[in-house]
Length: 438
Image (cartoon, rainbow, N blue to C red; front, side, top):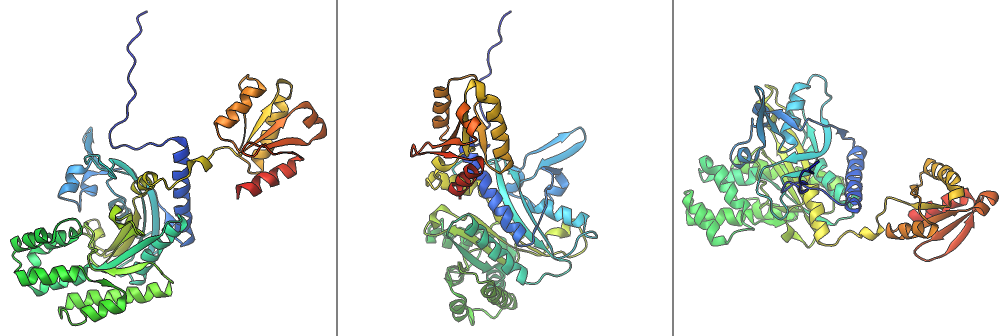
């Protein structure tokens, strides 16, 4: 019988997969983040990957529509979720009578965007989101809590970050003061790119939007304002008397006061933070790895007042934070941040002989019941081959189970890194392995 040609295995571009040691590290990061969310009283949520297109595209537009994976099955028009926020808005709107408010939820899941794959950008990636949704109103304490939560997440990952915080109402208020509200989104887009484009290019783009040279200079200087909250107040107190501008400044002060109560240590006030999504209406913030701001933001979030309005007549303001954990992990891998040699799926390997194999399996069972990741090599190989396999898999400890060990109930524990050997009872084995694992 003629054999068909083999299919060359290949992966779709922009879709992510890791080798086992990398996946162990990545999964540990997700577990740490989930612990932070739960410790801060956020509840888990898992929304479907597929949503009706009219739901997912309710508040998108522009480039987002082009990036969405959209298709039909029969007569059903559906999309793969491109973020976790719109599905949250749909969920809250559907279940508002059953939920307790403020509703604090977190979600860790994959999202999909059909953009061109490039460094730091994927078509499939994980987002780690936490949001607080209010019923009719939501205190600014929630804004500070989400900023503080982002800080705690990076603490749990042992990463030093700087969180840059602003309020979009400040820039929007100045835009209203110079009577350019109809160009507000376009102006904010230009200001959002100040760190990426030459100053002359930004000025030219603002000029095309109808701003005078003086107005362009003032709004660029405003967007470049940074410092602690005292310095911000000194610089902006009399900068603009527009009511929206002053409201934004007042909210920034209130969030700063609450962050102080939360003992926040990493926040800088930076009016250049705008965030690209137009559903942000007030507080906005982004996190940067300390001394590595050139790598771009590794997390962020903000306040949204109107997102649920597409699905409900009831006002449900919210604030949230998000970490693009796939991009962050990819950046850290490039920086050789992880020591993969210390990562293993096995605490100890049980090395048996033909006549002691069954006893070795019993020992594996006992160790696993005590929380030890124990493994036995059950292929029909020689003692020497099994030791080589333990070395190849970088197992720190092996437990040798021979006839003498079974008789005395004292097992030979060998440290494969130092070649030290011990004769220990099973209880002492467990204590030794666990203490070295800490």
